[in-house]
Structure formats: structure tokens, C-alpha cells
Image (tube, rainbow, N blue to C red; front, side, top):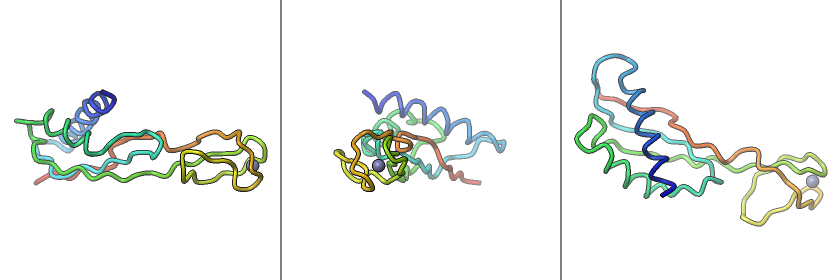
Length: 115
Ligand SMILES: [Zn+2]
């Protein structure tokens, strides 16, 4: 139920952003940036979102997902590189001791509301 709690949080953030400019606009589109390391399934989030916003001003909004790359740094040589597979090592020195420095993020990038 990883995605369910994430989606609840997203709905809260979107609703707050929706009323920020004043009024009570309808949400048309939501852009979500999700790090490649989060293992979040977009279709799952879409499903829960639809369920959670039924009967609200967010009903019918489209969710666009942008997957952010996973990057890591090498503990041995300090090289920073994009992670392209689950099993990886530093492409510069071959070291296996690495830290994920991005790819765990998940946030609402922008929302589009009707006038
Ligand atoms: Zn290295």
C-alpha cells in the first residue's frame, strides 16, 4: 500500500495548490516528478487518485509523470554517474561502494487549473 499513502499526500498538496491563487478552480492536469529509485507505479497512483478525488474539484484531472534519473556517487573516486540498471558499479573505477544521491524524490511539479 506504498502508493496509497503517497497518493493521499499528493491529493493534499494538489488541493492546497489549487486554492492558492484564490477561488475554487477545477484541476485539469497535474505534473508529478518521480525519481527512478522510488519504485512508484504511476498507474497505481492514477487509480488511487481517481478514487480519492471523486466528487471533488480534482475529479477528472490528468496525471502526467516525469521520471527523474537516478544518480549515484562513488565512494572510492567521487565520480557522479547516472544509474541505468539495478546492479551497478562506478563506470570510472569499477568501485561497487556507491551512494544514491538522487532518484528518491517525488513531488508535484505543477498543476493546471481551469479559469
Ligand atoms: Zn569510482
